[in-house]
Length: 280
Image (cartoon, rainbow, N blue to C red; front, side):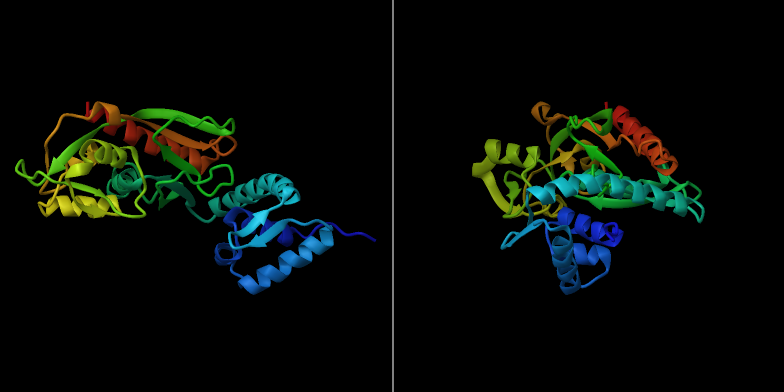
């Protein structure tokens, strides 16, 4: 007599497929990589299908693996919704929010302006200069600098972000460039293209670059909502027209009306829209 597929095996497979390997998936699941490896080999045997190619790049999905990963997305989404429904009964529900460096910092620093402990949601900030996967619910809400085009994404433009040049004083001539491994953002690319021959020092994170600028070593490009309030820096330019970017608030289309996520979307959206209007 045949039995149904083990739900735990499906959850384990989904985690490995999403992480691209055992190490990250084992941390998420709370099991050892060795145990997870055994489970996946047994799962492949039980299915009679090859799901992974094992190599230096980790666990790469086969054609069958990709097909199963697509099917487990709805299962993961349902599990997430059930977990959120369960958690609502015992207090605020954690809502994961991803944004780039400075927007994440701004949201964290100004948290009390749009959130209080009495809200039905608990903010969990996840800084990342790459777009985390909303489809797989790696995050619940993302703040993006361009309009997303995925059909399953709910989107709302919440304003614009302007950038300008900052330094400790007008006498600073050199520029701060990106070190190895730094994300190549539009502002980093602008510095390289327009002032690459005047770079005097480098940093691999925007926070470090701002600190070097505060020390009087070089000029740095910052979003104006950040640069205008960093002590020890002064603005040396008008807004840089070619760096002006849209700002979009995005979430999974099916999740946007879940009570905690809806409350978080409304609160964050109002805050960022007001911030954009204040900078005009």
